[in-house]
Amino acid sequence: MFTGIVEHVGTVVAVTPRGKVVQLTIDCGPIVEGVRLGDSIAINGTDLTVTTMTGTALRFEMVQETASITNLGQLRPGSRVNLERALRADGRYDGHIVQGHVDGTGTLQEWRRQQEDVRLFVACAPELASGMVPKGSITVDGVSLTLVDVGSDFFSVALIPYTLSHTTLGERRVGDLVNLEIDLLGKYVRKYLHQIFGASSASPTGTGLSVARLRELGF
Figure (tube, rainbow, N blue to C red):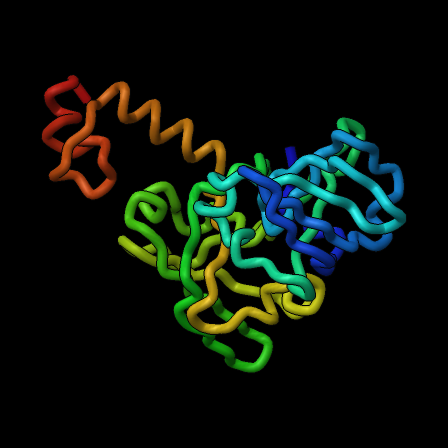
């Protein structure tokens, strides 16, 4: 479990195909302190397991499924990545609940900058956008952010200068792929509504929830 609060921006040292897996070697800098073999680290919001340790360089193994549904398949030596160690039970809880299970990718659509006000717009699949709500939480490349605008196939987030300078988001360009993880609580609410009210292709939420349906159920 993670919080979406990036601890360090690491650098990819090597990307090595090994049969059905790809080995990622990343210089993780100071966050290697206390890390052990088998520990989980979120890399651009993707939970991977430490398999080898050499100084500050940690090695991870990535299966094809992970490479295909995240932007980790695009990593090359020299790529910079957001890193976060798993949350300790006695640690401070900032950000929001993040599993490190990427739901899909989005495409950076637009930057809007007005002095200190920086807004990032991301295009995404409708099934991802349907799980988002304004003022809710979203994880973008492992960074916990608050949603501002949510459309049928896009969303926007506001970024403060600290986030821009302490994560890779400030380096992103229009057209880049970013990893997305929808708020875990929202996933459970949506599944519950689906089970209670049923699915309907006519409903933009996919739950079949409408005023008429509520009346049928006695509300």
